[in-house]
Image 1 (tube, rainbow, N blue to C red):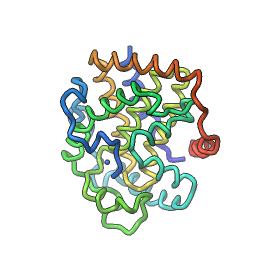
Image 2: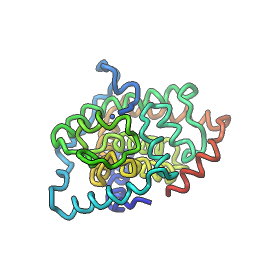
Image 3: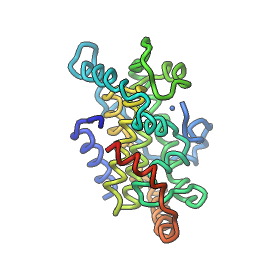
Length: 264
């Protein structure tokens, strides 16, 4: 298991709790969104994210060591899970959380949930891009022959900034939303969100510090979204939809759940 410092996850979780009281992407990510397809409230990550580690620093040394050591995972079950987690189409992301949620999350059967998450992620995209462009950090595999779990995306990923991790921001955002909507499964959902982020480290697409920043950024975004009345309304619609769906929803694939369990 990849170890991400616990205090990073605690900061991310605390921000989400206070608020409530990419290669492949969600299809909406590549669309030209109309203003009504986003929420009005969002955060500015340039105000609260620390800069990425500098060359020669202890944090960069840790990033280097972790990237090199995790290349040994190629071909493993954990590598396969990281490859799966790289798919950001909404149906795939929700499938990733099915085991943790205790039910299949089928977007065809959960239109309010799908709308809520699509709209929230559309709101985040500009902030993710601005942060990546601001630091323009080189990805760990660039200028190396080391493997990554999505080789077909190697060239495109290499042209994009590494910090913060967009996949992690998206994955942790979804985790925070689902944890609030399905509170009796919150711990498992948040654990799956943490695994979703570390999949980017296993994949070789991101440094550890990119993923840490993704957790924090997602928490800032979701915290800000709670100030939007439309977001709160959509959360309530999704909550009621999920409560009704849980009475008849199919259970997740047992094999998939066992694979996820092994990554913990």
